[in-house]
Length: 178
Image (cartoon, rainbow, N blue to C red):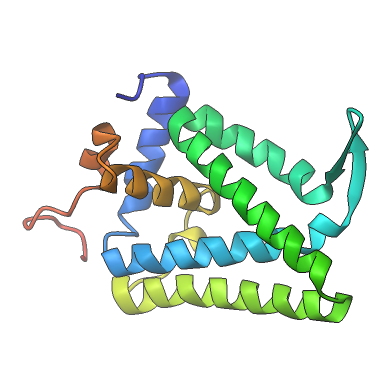
């Protein structure tokens, strides 16, 4: 069960608002695809820039992602660790792609991943939710998307019943549009 810390309470309140824009399971699926594509595409060019940090050669992608990863860990340690694990895999994929292709091909792949990721999210909202993306109303939702997706995964695997009530299906007598 989530300990009712200040960050935990903040996270649950933010998640409750976020879920109102993400009720349709098809939109959630589109978000999974979109977030994975966007993250991989966004970090790919940054993996080519290497900087020394505490005696290690670290990519700029990792350095720039650290504050966000720390924020997610502070919001919810379990979900943050899940995102960290997925991030390591996506950093590895982005690094491998960037190292194997030329500069032009890398930028083309970057553009394709970003466009496809944004398209997946836009289609999810427009087609399946019938409304604009919450990002335009609540810019902080850019950081909540990965937490939402990881929470859905944890719930599907039988973990985090404390979040299931927040992310569960909409009651039939709800005033929401979906």
